[in-house]
Length: 251
Image (tube, rainbow, N blue to C red; front, side, top):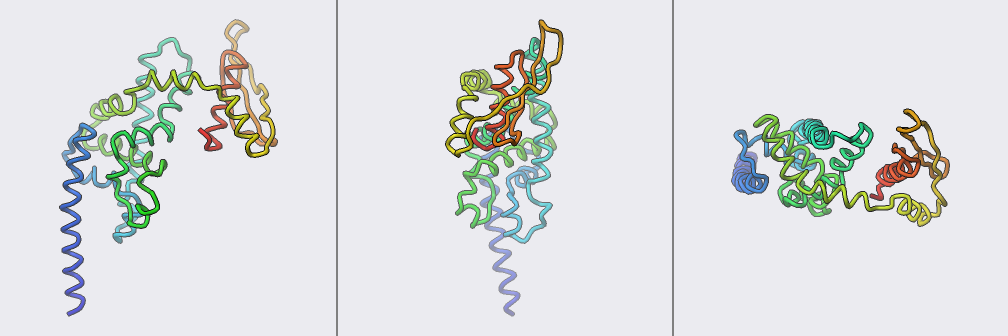
């Protein structure tokens, strides 16, 4: 008799959870401007692995596979945008711009802008530990959302979503990034840790003299932590310093 009571309690709890989730799915659909034909895809995009394990579901039911797909779709769409809008930019410059737009820090902020942390499904313990505000979880869920939209509606709805929620402040983002002195910031960071001065060295020079491209690497305590390319050594050093700051988690 006890197992029957337990079964019906669990069933009732799942039905209550289902009704609550359906309401949340409607809200998040309105926030992102896309309504799913298959709401199960949206639900799966929101499932963090902690939620899946807490509800005794299979690990394959988390949003990690959708995150993998969404990451690739996002890379494609941002690359397409940059290729179409910056005809005068070289491959290295386009790569640097793309790496900024799809960086975890930027995507986490984009997720915050649509309040995604309130909708991601976490275990009670993960939620209490601040998982809804954790950058890595926000970024991963944001990419899983793109993957779900792609499977549900194809590339065009994804293109619209990326345009409205990723590239909406592109010019401001690039301008803000260009105004940062990454070498100074990296120096301040390394000195705060007692690691002295970063060391920069040119690893390669490509192209004719009038269009030379420099490749620079930067090391801290004899460990290479970043690399960058530019039309001058100064520009390449800035790119290397930015790469190092990201590698060190300081940007």
